[in-house]
Amino acid sequence: MNGILRAVLAAVLLFSVVHAARALDVAATIDKAEAQLAAGDSDGALQAADEAVMAAPQNPEALHCRFCVYVARAQDEDALADINRAIELAGQNAKYLAARAELRLARREYDAATKDLDAAVGADDAYAPAYRLLARVKLCQERPRAAIEDVSRAIRLDPDDASAYLVRGDAFDAIREREKARADYVKATELDPKSTAAWYKLGRLDFLRTNAYERAIQSLDKAIALDPKAAPAYVLRARAKLAVGGATQRASALEDLAAAIQLDPEAADAYFVRAGASRASEDYAGAVADLRKALALDPKNRQCRALWNEIYSKDSARLIDEAEKLLNDGKFDEAAARVHKALEIDPRSGAFHQALRIIEAQRQEGGK
Image 1 (cartoon, rainbow, N blue to C red):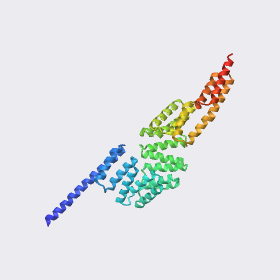
Image 2: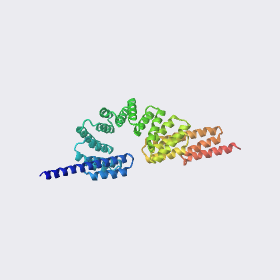
Image 3: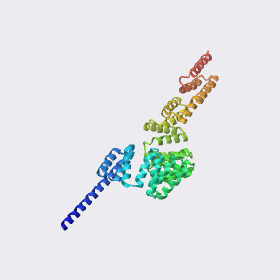
Image 4: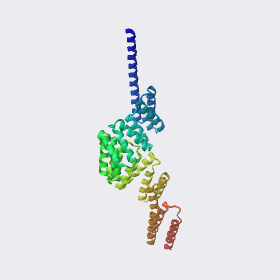
């Protein structure tokens, strides 16, 4: 009997050791997947996450790991299948419910996201990310004051979460409390100096809200240094440089816009900003070409259409008026140059071509 008992105990011990070793292997594989995902290697991360799930198909953390990889790869349906299974296995788990809510938020499924987050708070009312995500949902629903209440609770629970300060900064910005918004963005940069989003938002606020262009450029320098592929940061920095003015800043701004377009050829705002810069230097051919691209990418863009109308109506009319005054003063070359500028705007304009013929005729008549 004692021998049988010892054998059973030995078998149980062996099972425990093997199980513990397997759990360690799964945990290590999950860590590997997370590290590869953080490094931008989604293929490697997916391979490691698959291995973790195959080794422990009933492990919700392995499923959550693969869910995160699928989200990064924009494989939403696969991601949902994994997180649904993780919730099934773990029950009302705040972390997994919040993870599913964040995906639903990205898909603009606000009611479903809210339901998950309410359940997450019900499972753990001290889980700060759930309140931060609730605030993001409310911001999307244009309820910034309610968002401030939720995210402030998240900050009280976790004062070191930089992303929570970004959300509250957005909410303060939405209700035009600019100084509070700026304070939260600054706090986010202090907590996470490597946050591209924090530096970008700070730069954007300084540029758009307080007209502190030099300060905006400094923040955007840091955002771009952290993420050299962040096309919107180049566009915004270009706008700030153009606002500062001067030939050096203008040349640097054009370099930023070229970089933005190279990174994202469908960045309509980059073409729009460059069109404005070209117009300011009377490069109307460049301005019109960029506006055509911007409107092809974003036909409903009101700013583009407004600039288009300004150039085609006001600028062309001004150029012809200037040409007429120069012609009356007998300055034929200068008058023709102004009409040629108008032709950059509308090369097919019969009126502009007629104006050139009139200038040439009067030049010849004056030479007799």
